[in-house]
Image 1 (cartoon, rainbow, N blue to C red):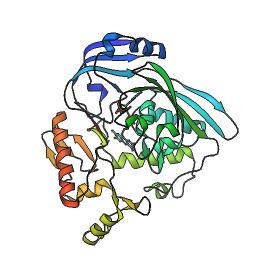
Image 2: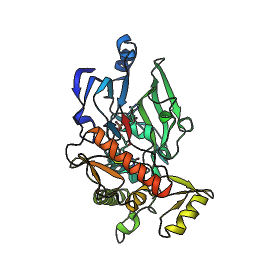
Image 3: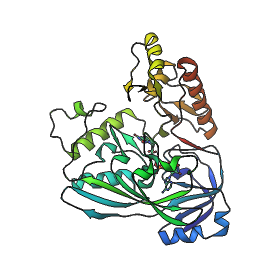
Image 4: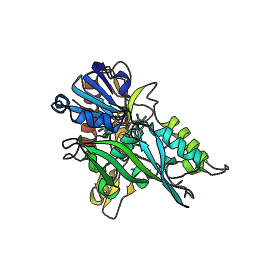
Length: 337
Ligand SMILES: Cc1cc2nc3c(=O)[nH]c(=O)nc-3n(C[C@H](O)[C@H](O)[C@H](O)COP(=O)(O)OP(=O)(O)OC[C@H]3O[C@@H](n4cnc5c(N)ncnc54)[C@H](O)[C@@H]3O)c2cc1C
């Protein structure tokens, strides 16, 4: 187990904010984790479990314990003619896990290629892209319940998954469970999901298989999204809002070209990026932070931004969309005070 005092989180958040944590703890095994949970000092502290920090905004130094899993490994958990179930350690890099599945010819997660982060967070966040969510393939999530130190295995249904939502994200449960492993169910005869974004047109004239789908998605994402290695960011800052059909009807009269995706017969989803662009906010700056000119849903650390610069810019975006459209944007990025 690694325990470091006054540790910089620069390499642990994709906004590249040079904030410090009072303590940084990385456990390598379940035995390590059990020891940590039996430690009186640790249990008396404020703590936060992180992955790669690709969905976190640190507003300043963290006066507590930042915990990171070092549990690795991808093992076959069970297998039959149609499927294989993989048990992956929480700290496995998500995209490396997707690449592993694709190379083996096991389908299900290929549309989630190139999403930053770790396997543990994929189950916490229910990551999604191009018509697929992690929850479509998650069989079980293995956790430790922090207050009692007990191991608990969640079935897919118990995780209460929906759009970018899980049981673990709910206010009453947030921070109470550390995820050690996730069981993913992959298909040996995958059905390809190509109807989202311009995946189908990107594959025109090509043989369609897991590898070409993965490559198409990687190339689309590289074109559309700022690379956090070059310009610090945490992906979409806001979730796409759902509005009721009556509100949509009223807005459509004013904005006939407003894109929308029906969710059911009462609710439609509106792309937050379109709303932000309509407010004229593309490229808007505040301190060192900027609304990305490549993808307005992303806020970037353009020039030595502080966490506060980014938070204030996000608040200005939220307010502007609320004033212009009466739509409340909810952050996807989690702010850490
Ligand atoms: C360029 C870019 C593009 C992105 N595109 C997408 C996208 O297309 N779709 C999408 O859904 N997301 C996207 N994201 C957001 C991000 O990649 C995901 O939210 C990812 O799952 C975060 O993983 P992480 O390991 O960095 O987790 P972190 O950001 O470190 O943590 C995220 C949350 O998970 C919790 N957590 C992490 N690990 C554990 C664990 N082992 N046990 C308990 N809790 C844990 C943390 O406490 C925190 O609440 C994007 C981000 C970037 C920077």
